[in-house]
Every structure is written in structure tokens, then in C-alpha cells.
Length: 259
Image (cartoon, rainbow, N blue to C red; front, side):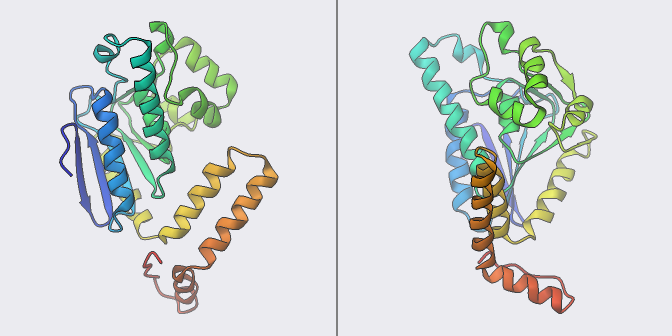
């Protein structure tokens, strides 16, 4: 795993991926391509069960797209970059393993979209969030208009998108954009703590939970219930289900194999 703008450390079934373009870790085409490649590797690695995604330093998680690159592109080039960003965020959203965003600083524009593509978000109390695109004469193009409203509702999403104002971690917590806020010093350890807890759970059951929630959220209730039923059956058919039930009967801690 040798990448120019990404760092990856794997320990105890948890991969910590760090976007490494300090001080503000902007997203450009190369970062998108590296994220795509690395997440493919992590998906295929059976030794990895949970992924933590963060930015280098304390100033920014990701302070948006690389405006210097965007300013040089024509419509064809921007559309190509935009397509790449959507593909990468969707890949992160739908990878079979839980992804926790450790938001260590500014999460602006594409950085905010990247965080929203993750399953869970833990924020530093110093982090700030914004979709500032409208002030640049553009709009979010990596899924922000869609993923945000599913979390906060359409009215609040329009407020945040239309005005583009920056808001702090406290409001992000109130709006359920982040799951937890901790100090900057505690952030990475808090994310790892959640990741290690998830890494001990049955991987197929977690995958089926993620599929049921993600796919079900994009359909009607009846179709969602059918998706849930299929995912339930897939989880029930595993060796891990047998281990979980047997461990419960024997009053011991289960050891899950991922099968």
C-alpha cells in the first residue's frame, strides 16, 4: 500500500486511513483515484474488518476539493472529476465493512461529502462543517445534496446548502450529522475504540445490517422489508450465527470467524 497522498495503518483488524495533504488535505483527482484503489484493497483484505478515515493534522479533515485543480478545468474536465468523486464516495458508502470518519478539523464541501459517505462520524470539538459551494457559483456535486437531507431533513438541508454558513461540532451533533464529539486529543483513540468494538462483531451480520439500511433507505417500506428479510436469512445461514447462539447458551464471549 504505497500511495502519495494516503497513509494506511492496519492493526488488530482495523485500518486507519489518513488523507495526507497538509495543512488542509484537499481532494484532487489523484486523491480520489488513490482512495478508490485503497478501498478496493481494504475490501479484499480479510484481515480488515473496520476502517477509520481521517485527515492529517488538526486543521482539516478535508477542506474541500482542490480549487487550484478545478480552476484549470473546462466543463468536460470538471464533469469527469465530479463523476470520479461520486464514484469514490459511493464506493466508501457501500463497502461491506463499517467506515468511521474521525473528523479532526474543517470538513468543507467535498470533505463534508466524504464524511457523509461514511457509516459513523466522530468529531473533534474543534471541527467545523460547511457546504460553501454556492458562494463560488457552484453546488455540491459529490452527493452532498442527497446524503445531507437524509440525515437532517429537507428543510435543514436547504438552510445549510443555500446559506453555506460554517457551523461547529456542537450543532453537527444536534443535527445528528455526527454521532459523537470528543476533544481533539481524544479523537483518534475514540474512533479506534469504536472500530475495535465493531471488529469483534460478526462481519457478515454487520455487512447485512449495512446492506439492509443503505439499500432499504432508497426504496419504499415494503421493498425495504423484503431486503431486510433477505439480509436476515443471509446472516442466519452463517457459522457465526451458530457461534453467537452457542456462546449465549454457554454464557461465554463469542469468537467470530467471519464465515
